[in-house]
Image (cartoon, rainbow, N blue to C red; front, side):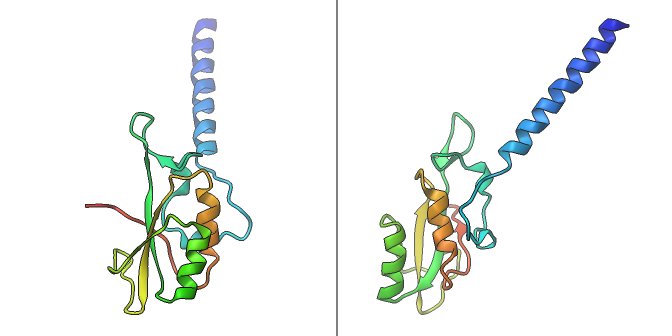
Length: 133
């Protein structure tokens, strides 16, 4: 009887530890003022280095967004992160005629701050994950 109790107790204890770990891993801390509703991908799956995936197969998350094709907006975005790439295509974000597509990725220890600064820019409507085909 005692052995059965210990086995059940151990099982529920391990189950409780596992669910606590999952709850913690699904949270992420973001800077104040971050407009998370503009970021259209799950930041909780990205580690501190900006990588997502299994331990054996981690990669950066590529993302894209549209901005007005003016020198002032391009300069403002590039000041946030100079490694962004500009593209003339519409991308999956379907940039408009007077917009330019900007590509970036999360492979940066400061990716949360970068994404949050972008989310605060009025002219950026959404930041989408890019899936290369």
